Length: 246
Image (cartoon, rainbow, N blue to C red; front, side):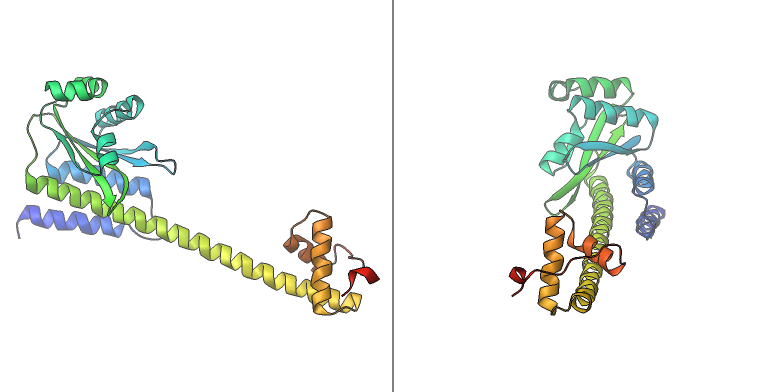
């Protein structure tokens, strides 16, 4: 195993080690930006992620110059990251002085050249058909990246994407679990209130639930809130009239 191979393995292990309970996505992506610059032999790296509206936002950059380039890209709505995010495919320009690049992204290209960069490669952060953002690789020299370098860069981007998707899935699962627990707690509270009303109003269980529901609707309150007030003896619910029974 060469020193480069060993370093690549160490970086993947390092990125995997960040996927813990106290996962910090900003720290994770800052580290990814630095490691991309190191392993891929590029001058700088910027990372953008889409929010829940599908709008790209800058989340990490390996240098201040790269940060400004990424902000220009987002503000002008033109650049390789937007194209890679939209298409789900890598986008590469070996020389930003090329007329094709300058006509395609005039404001982005001018800002990137002013920052000292001459070539760019954007890689989508994707998991199957789900594209979360893009990684932008900036170089001060012209030329294309090798196939092996692009493959490694895409592997790093994909690994980061898997980590983010995994974290989002955990967060959703925690939310679902919390909502389920709240529902279970509510049901227990309602059953307690029904038992209380059954005893205090001398009605059966079905009638007790009808009384509880009718009171909640009449007072425009949540069923669980009324049940809690009944159990805690904060309110007194009147007995049902003869026409309300049955």
